[in-house]
Length: 131
Image (cartoon, rainbow, N blue to C red):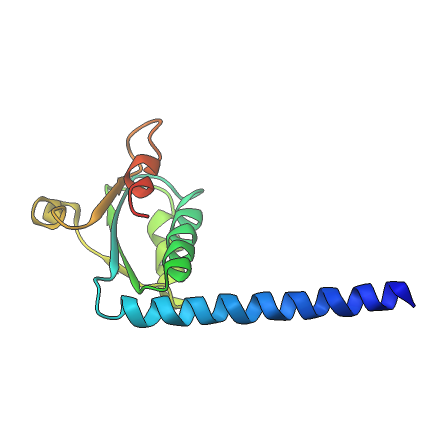
């Protein structure tokens, strides 16, 4: 009998927490509609193994913030299937656009640039200041 009451209380508590999370997310989404969308520039070269993880991580951060996001992928002559993985993610609904690396000069003023070509950085310093 006591175990059943504990289960009822736990389910009720989870339901209350879920309602609060959804309410907070809806509030931040309305506030975020008038603010800028999150825009990331991702520079890659032979990053087939990690590109999907980075794009999904950026999508998750935007989801948590309740904002729209855009990833601009600039590939630096990859010889593996980095671009093919990104195209597959774009077709499945990720907000990815592909731009030649030569256009980086004018784009990096207001966006967060994540250069995966730099050894050791992994782009984590660029992303950390976002929230």
